[in-house]
Length: 254
Image (cartoon, rainbow, N blue to C red; front, side, top):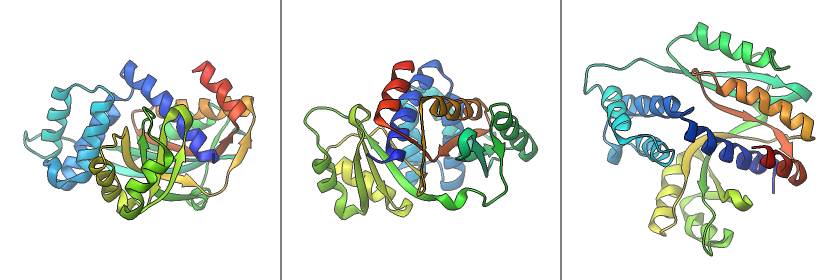
């Protein structure tokens, strides 16, 4: 199992816990608004909006909140805010690369919150291009574990749709990787095969990994937690490589 897959497992579990606390509701709603504004308010004709809505529903965001976000983003109620996507690059303790995606209506506020989150937790903000070259943008679909579903079952369902790789995440389910342009086709292939999925979105996968021990992993997660506590930050990716033993220890703490 590759390092990024193990990290995805931990982050996926953490996201589920955060959602129950309502921590990520605002970010999911913001994603829906932006998707509706960019591609229109009809999920049937806007795959990005469809996936944003599905992700929000799976995180138990109330339907009324989702509907209002679609209307705001689609300009159906005359409201809404103009957001822009910004990418920041930096380092966590131990030289671990961190890629940060912000969705904000205030560049200065976003930059300040990212810098503070990094520096207060032993990290640092890097220059543009300092770590970005270590990551490639990929479509990532998480399929929940359950029943007798196997890695081969999923691979057979998505191979012709453009999937590049299927990783078994153990209790975390399965991770399907593809080019971002093939994300809708792969997600549709899963649906056509009757296979449910937890999330489908474009993200970043590291090509270079840094192995961390338990203490190093905790430091990285403190940085990630601090960044994700900011309303400006939508997603955080790292190239931390966590062993099975360290992952088990972290899971026990979560």
